[in-house]
Image (tube, rainbow, N blue to C red; front, side):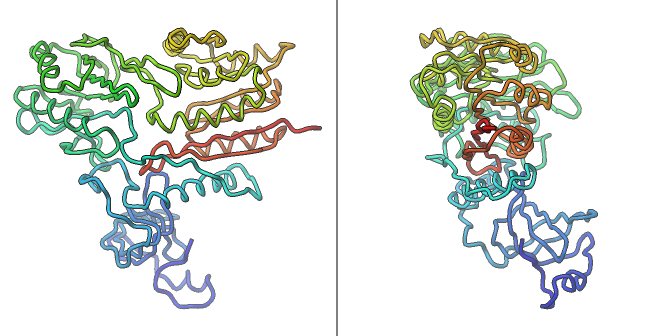
Length: 474
């Protein structure tokens, strides 16, 4: 990072010592050098790291210090003195208020370059990998209108002050009224506004996640990008809803683009868009979507890749690396609803998917039957226990695919995988830091052959990666 702040020239140590340590409320001038995992700007003031609420790399800015920690400062940008050459005009009118899309004012080409660099830096810093080549990144085209699922929250108060939209930055207790969202289909904002208009005419209170009062919690909207279907799921607290019978016919009349709508009840204090389905107003109660050559049935609360088009590109990369020779057997760990397994089935002789959640396994089996796939077997089991049980088998899997949760692989799972010793492993990760940590352990017996970053969520700090490691010859 660049040493910023107006300081004397000469020895860097002398420069650092020449700068007084800022205190809360002080105004300092820095250059934004990078952005962090939450999209915050990162710069330096002498030898102090400064993290700001926003900012584009290359901006020269005035920052008001809001908090002073032992090793870094937190601050809020007061004004941009010299804008970065990578700065662009945000497309969404809610940018700056909304808690999402933190990178929308950064040119997309630079987002891709930064994300690929961040994956490389995590491999170097966390995984201790040296002499890494430049890491290619698969960009998202188009990089707007890519999300097939959005969760909207209620805020304000009952009646005409009711709001339905997204959370403001750093405020998960309230919501702002949504006029538009460039991440998903334009029809979604129309549906959100129609729902809010209906509910604003009644007395239903928005749910308060702190006080645990109120009734209206979430509206979840799913889009079939390739089927033109739309699912709307209204999530409320667990109590009677006198106007429920009116709501379904209203949606069906006012929003003909909706193909199914349902009511889900969350009676817990957990502030999540999940619960038990109370009723289906109309339609089948689920969504269908096509991904590549396959059609999937998606339950209202089931997991499915949020970016349909990028998922197809990611899965194609997995197939290429996991099954270089047609007809081989592949083990797919953390297989979820079976999407990767079905894609692997096109080239593999047999695919065994392992997933601990029984509902996901049942969905995977239905998806295989729906598509006439006969060479996939799905097992409901703890991944660690399953791999340990297979470790003593005389027949080993030539290919192994792992797509673990954000926390990565359990250390015992890594130890067992090393004992099983498949010739190659394809690791799909949504957390480059966890990937780097796990690869450091796995490459005691393997070589890191290839790695590619995949931008599943443009305009956000998130990035996925796919790595191929191959058994080292003794």
